Length: 192
Image (cartoon, rainbow, N blue to C red; front, side):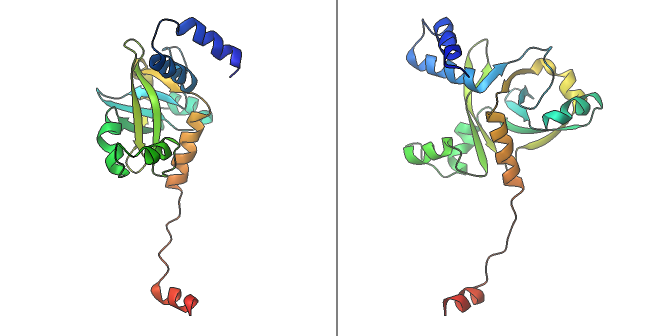
């Protein structure tokens, strides 16, 4: 994104609000795009699936048109609105006061989870959350027709390169190879 575009956005949208709110809106602008019902269903779209549950389409973009038109299965990584507050710290065994571990988590250093900061739940009220996606439990499948019929429940998409980062991290997690532990006898053999 060009510096002039960021400056124009900042000047047009951030004059009469607090510094904290300015930063939040700027990062939302960089990470997310507001969608309309006429936009095609694509990778990175975020659907509200129930009152507190959301799903991010991670099926490849090149497949999306066919998946939706032929009512095939579309893959979504799902999370609940309060997962960051209720599960994140417990899952990664991080204290809310451990700034170093929290910083590493926001830099996506844990392979089994992903954080999406300042995710706008609704643009009307400017409500946002930090989304915590636990790769162990987040994959769900939805029919293309369901997504098409519920397009009004989709208000935002994750911008590039953040959607590619999420997809790559998820695929790296599920594609890891489980290798058995080296037996003690082999360790002892190598050490003697």
